[in-house]
Image (tube, rainbow, N blue to C red; front, side, top):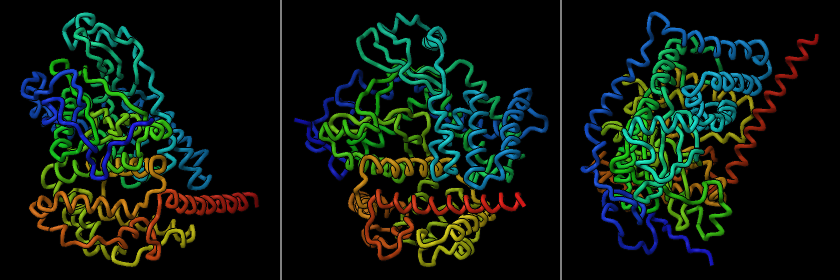
Length: 555
């Protein structure tokens, strides 16, 4: 008989056994530890806070545009990117909006592949930004996820031995030469310690740190010249995208920071009594700048829905637990995993989700965390002024922005528009007007907001496979009820709003999904049908414009 799923709707495990390890009070770890996590006894944590401050302070210097181009690398990058944009201008620009963007996206993807690890990493970040970046760019850059060849085992051995200061065989009784996964910054190998524990070892690629810094200098030099010249950047204009990328990647270059991220997120999950997610334990002593040894966790791949259901796992509760835990970390602690995607999630046989890869983590200071909380409360109350003010305080809008003007010009107080009732020309005009207005206000996408939105969009897409029949409006109501019942006092203390006295504006929630008032509920499958209808109308509009242009050219 398949095992019964053990996730409860309240984001805890049903019949959770007593902690089998003392360090479960420290973090949300597995119940069968290969070693104990005692943070104060982990030598690699010495000076970790100062290291994080220094790393963040380096970003403005890395992205400052110099008067003189930074060496030969800027020439190489300029040639590659220039050739991509030039090829698009000559051959793809006049093919219609969708085909034009697809052509440019393909040319940029090929250029990024040739430019190496830094640009592949940038492309991978873009590829998980569905809804933030144009669909054509996201789809094309997804091909970069599997395009990174592994380093040779000799190179891996050299890096591990240099950083650990010991012969490989003195530390590991087995070290698999073929990696489990190879990414742009590092690759991961399975291994067994001489003391018998099964582990995974993350090893940084050689010289990637210096290459990233050199590439950031080149990106910062080139990015301003691309502003307004290519139709694939939206609100993430090239200079802002480079700055955001620098903030993101700089911390990934030191695995001590990643190991600390693991401890911090595990602590957040423990403090919120969330037992539905599991964090691998970093090793007490085998963590260095370029080498990270951690507990090995297993489970079903995120896309193996059939296997989960056969094991008796309720996949709709899995996605709900992931959403709740993610929101709790962001709203209550300002710390959350910044790179949710299928490769970073394993669903264990008991229904818990093993969360992997902590190189990219969202961290908000107290002021931004409170702004973020106000943003979500504004969404629940359908209060556009509270939302716009919160976006300003998050750094998405300038500090001196006129909130009333933004609310008025974007029509945020008007009745919701049903995009399926609009023509393709009306949809295009609406999107163009909103984008133009946001850019005129100086809108940008701060790192934390981009990571949060990116994660939400991933979880949104995951519902298509794990919970296609769940009522989305009901799920939002459940999430609001969870925070009301569990954290009302904390929320009132933080922002002076008691959610127990709030009535969830379900009509406003439906409006954010583009639903007219008469639509009371909608499943993800039904929402996708609406989205496909909108997409088909936009594609038909593009094809019609292309035919008219060809007819004019033939005359």
